[in-house]
Image (tube, rainbow, N blue to C red; front, side):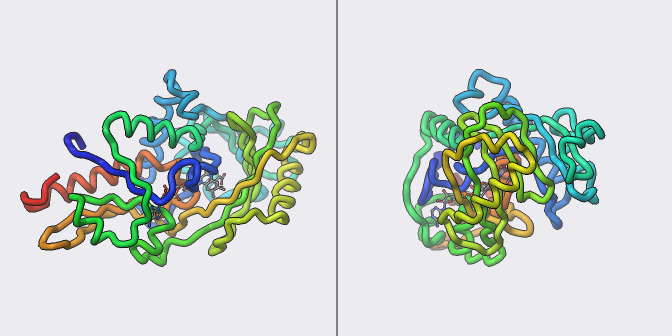
Length: 313
Ligand SMILES: Cc1cc2nc3c(=O)[nH]c(=O)nc-3n(C[C@H](O)[C@H](O)[C@H](O)COP(=O)(O)OP(=O)(O)OC[C@H]3O[C@@H](n4cnc5c(N)ncnc54)[C@H](O)[C@@H]3O)c2cc1C
Ligand SMILES: O=C([O-])CC(=O)C(=O)O
């Protein structure tokens, strides 16, 4: 959207957002009420966008790179071939020979996807944003109508904050705890299909996890959770027993049955101000980031084209 000035207002920026701790692996779950074609587009657009970065000299600074590994299941899943399998590289079912490494699992998928480490990616994006004149404000927003007095359009990307900011009780936390491990010999990711055990080798350390505790707002590290994570991960990848824990991290996934990517208007002092929502990505916020952002932009364009002339950007 050229010829507009953009201000990002947030209470917290990198390294203090949920994304900063996320593993950043591109791997999606299917949302029940969003047309599958839309979900495919969200995934593909994000994958292609991040792949172009991974293939460029910017890859190291942006923290985006290809990552190969295994997704193993104790029971054969209903969906053996997920919708995103067309977009990652080399998706296939694991062979019996490969499955012998996972004696507690019956089925597996092998593929190469992308990993986008937000601890690098967010500051990289922020630098690019500032370089083209973007404004950054550290502030908690409590009233969108008040905000709308000073802006021509608002994009609401406040994640779990939307529970309070737009009083959306459908968005709730799913607590996730992870450990940062030093195990530089590990190169392939391994994820258990139940989402409670995963090992993601990264640039600085290996992320191992996890927990999925719905409606749990605790941001403190739970030592019992850490113990459980280590035990489960060592079972899946026994070489981890020789590794060292470098850190622990907790994040709250901004979860909703379906992400909210939709538009409405605020009515302020006789003006109709477009408001476009883009939140509630749960455990797929990195995976669907670019695709949902492009949809958000499209929705904003639609609103602007409908708007009365005096309030145009
Ligand atoms: C353990 C764990 C592992 C994960 N791994 C992956 C993964 O491998 N792949 C993947 O795709 N996703 C993963 N995720 C999910 C991912 O982190 C989230 O989906 C993503 O961070 C959501 O991004 P967001 O920008 O919507 O929300 P957030 O990252 O939470 O950012 C919300 C922003 O809004 C601001 N804000 C909120 N309310 C207000 C307000 N009132 N005023 C001003 N600012 C406000 C906050 O300060 C913050 O800057 C993981 C999450 C966890 C917890
Ligand atoms: O589930 C995973 O593999 C990683 C992730 O997205 C999460 O923990 O939210």
